[in-house]
Length: 205
Image (cartoon, rainbow, N blue to C red; front, side):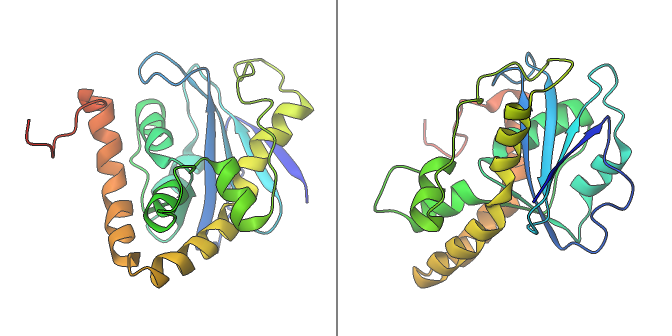
């Protein structure tokens, strides 16, 4: 198991043959349109994590963009709504197809209101994740070893979580509903980008 840091973009062909990758991102904050995208971390579920420290001046990352838009590779997120919106704003691509473990958890684990990655990982995988670096400076020119380890931890377990949650979704008869939600997720992210972030367009009022 190793963490690999790449500057500016992924190496060409790094995930050739993969049918799914786990993805997360680190930003300077959580406000769309204000806070820049700094790091994208990716794992194919085999134990290694690849982190791309982006060049914030131009965001020219063709290999990363190609992966995000590859129709043959499912991108697994936890709360993908935010990451997908950030990728659209800063990289100019619509990420698809996608799977979101937070949505899956909310549909399958209706016995709890704790759907954060730390809580879901602890219950379903017995993995206790540290969130100590969550609010650190991701815009720094040089990332610390602790930051790299934290970023990697957010993607290393998503494949295993997907398997467990899929079992629960099938058991509860909600797997088709979950797939429909995943298909809609990129559109929900685009609504956020275009100003409907806090508006439920499906509500009566």
